[in-house]
Length: 278
Image: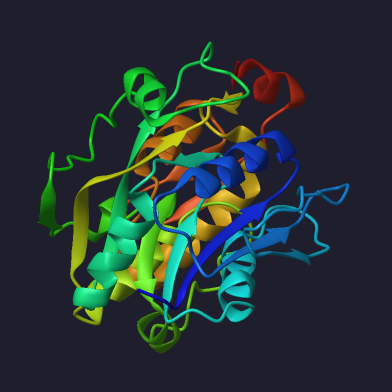
């Protein structure tokens, strides 16, 4: 099997990137190339090795996820694209399993992501340790083996997925009108479903998400989330990220109805700080 590109984007997470690359190097199937789009404040470096890695510097403000993923795809050569978020560590068979299903069928393939805890940090991992530490997602139900078709496109996630290049290009990639953080992946899932592309949840293809501090709700991305929610509603006639919008409304930040979304005020520094979860 050839013609497989592994794609990731990074902003200020060099340690996570190192673990991702280590996981790729341990993989039983080696991609033809690894494309890393670097948006970090200080450029990242990657140790030389047999794995063909290409670093692409992308100077930018904020976190333009859609544009960065598109740049990674445009810079790659493979007929099959496997996207992996920088904070994910692939288990040995993940890349090959996703690429193999893409060789057999034209679909949007999600790998399973399991979550490492706050104390699960180490320099060297192996599959057994990752599987022992990783917790399953509470909503996304993956089979133990084989493939399950998911009919809800809202459950597509961009953490770990694969797609044929021709299909990605036919869909127009991620919609770069979704600037910054939020809803760009949900929109992509909806467009794939509208185009008749089946969403497959692939059992046994696993990556483990590295723990990092986060915000609950993600008030640091408030402006992006509000703008992208409005755009999504304009396109699809429904609201994405409803849980976050409900939290914003409860905090008195927005006025949100079935038909409209208005900003009352932005979150204060104190509110953003209080939302931080270590």
